[in-house]
Length: 418
Image 1 (spheres, helix red, strand yellow):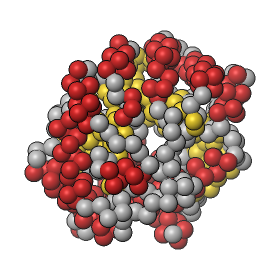
Image 2: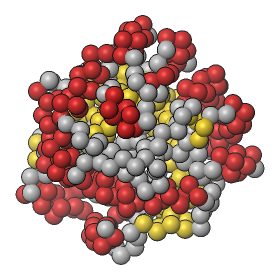
Image 3: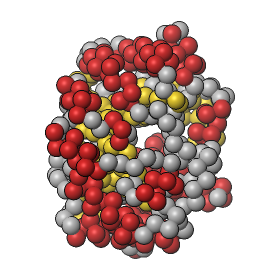
């Protein structure tokens, strides 16, 4: 695996230099002149910790949660005050964990964010199915939330059992969503589970749209080394078959594909907390992506609160990009949307895309991974599968390694990703 990642990294970045994360950070973040800036807030608390979930989370305790929210608000002010003027941001997303467990304080967090940032495209939040109650959704609407994403994973009992999830009352879910409508109602599902068939996947997708979703995300199961799930995912051949069948089915139904794994039945339905050119992240494990750097906060709640109490940023590690590294990161996440716009690339980096990656694009078209339509590179079915393959590959090679270390050490000295 290391040889493959080494060769791909060396070729695409035109350098032998690995991605090096160091235990350092800038006191002042250079986000003032950046366009298309988004915000993300991480709330790490859950009533029940799912074995398959790799994200930074811990069991809910009210005192710990209150202490954490206090620190979170302080971090928001430390960063927000660095801009001389109120900044326009595209969006604000709350993830976790189960953010709704802190619903009594989310209004306070949003109020403090609005002192520094003007949110132009709405506010989204991830929800556990247990959170989908009329009282909770009404409260979220009052607080200004416009998008919700419900982590279903599967409606089918056999997969709920495998994933350690409770059965979802579909009738109750549909009733609540009808009573309290949102601009976007997204539902998350997992594919490539043991013995999963297209009929299983189709059943979940059909149920989601029938119950009130206007957007679905169907993510591949990834077996992280540090999660105790014990679930063995499908082979690559089965993954490709399922992904192709899912894509063709959604196309036949007239659903819009807005990323490798997401589909909607409405032009206005969007939900993506990470696929933005630049973003600021607040809370444990939250990441910040800027033009020249990528930084990640500590995963340790106590260390996070202590660092913020000292009026310091809770950054655990920072990667300072070379230009080529930043271009690779940009293209990787832009391709996730299944489209790459050369003009956007030129505006972002000041150089033509063909000048930097003309040969790679030629090869991608020759191999049938993408087509050039109206000046935009559009991913094919074949390209989508191989994107999924490499995303899974690099997740295990990079994210798995980094998160494994950060789960054990609050502020590691250095991590090299090759």
